[in-house]
Length: 569
Image (cartoon, rainbow, N blue to C red; front, side, top):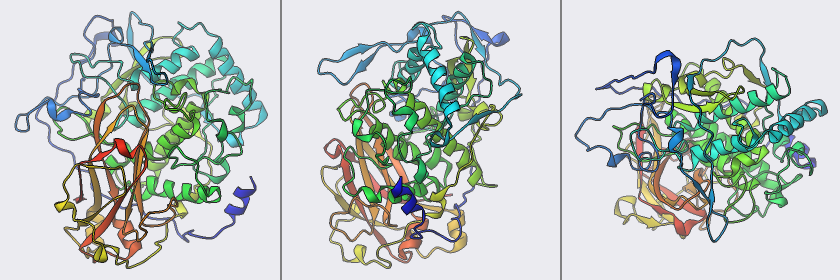
């Protein structure tokens, strides 16, 4: 902890005033069709047609929406529909040479109730894990112990709760009326689905110990004092301990929010780099809702998948940092097994907290998508009474309306806007890198790839910047879903080999993914904010920027389809 105290007193890179998030007007597209089919009396039964708010999403839809409709024919845009549990298929364990069947399918109930949030009589309190006292820890351990003692076929048991993530995230569900597989990552479903997941997990634990105020602890990894595996999860013999971890990352190891499968050579810089990473994920790269939540998906959008900044950044890094240092990465380093790790729930409790913080940081700016395709998307969970319920995205937007609140802690990353190493850099003007328009894409990322990208607009006024965000788009990112991959993006970096340190304004962001259960080629894209970055580099008048794509993990398995700059209002 000495490193934290020393760091906390450092003035470097700290702004006198918190940064301003650039605003953008949120426009909704016109709809040609609107169809709603609701069940009667709030109940449905397996074998009957489920609520058909259906969006064909998954490896066939989320990664291949262009295959669903022709470019010039209208399509029926409808939300994601809760899956038919009777059609759940089996998953696969990647950590063996001979893949092992994994059955993640839940019990099937005879009825489904449309869930309504109960009146909030007592607020549940979610503490920062590193600040939790002995009494709270003992209560949490008891709750998990009781959950683990439930019969395996009880939908509230620890095994079945772990299977919830396995089933929804490893392509075991078909969308009703289609053979497309459901996947709730890499899109705007990421935050609301995981919020519901933690909501019911938390309520089950609270009922087991008869405490309606019980709330999950959040792993406060965005604060220097919390950038360690919380001690309550590191004690052998505790119900919160998991043996399938990277044992080199037990306390006092510092959690690396840009972990690439290798421990950083300079451990003393991790905390500073972490705060820069958080500033990018929560401020610099999320002026647009899509860039925080992830891309929109419905049947009439012909675009690739794309995760939001937190999901593809710190979220993925810590999944791999906690998981075993193996190909499979069990438990937390792989989607099929991550729910077996008690720390997973505290990790995602912090991701959930960041969603609430993001909405608060936006002030009067749009906080959520108004699209019915998002708001009416629905899922199935078992509640604390072992009742199968259908829930909607629209009910997740306010955590306090769902009955829980977070302990308030300082947000040091708000004051950690990075500083350019070289202002008015001539890196673009003097580089012999090819122009993006002349580069033969796709290119394999088995080495650092540098291209010059033309800026369609330059010398933009303050009003121009307020009306439109300048975005760097890396598109056609093709990877193997079974591989952990990561690459980082730098702008006008004068180093021939960009260093492992990212506490500089030249760092634009990253792409990474948690492995799935099977091997499938998938395509996605990322968008990185340039407006503030170009101000920091003082190159707003330049015609071009030099973009460096730096592979950090699995580069040989990554290809890039194109790079360009767009302006989004």
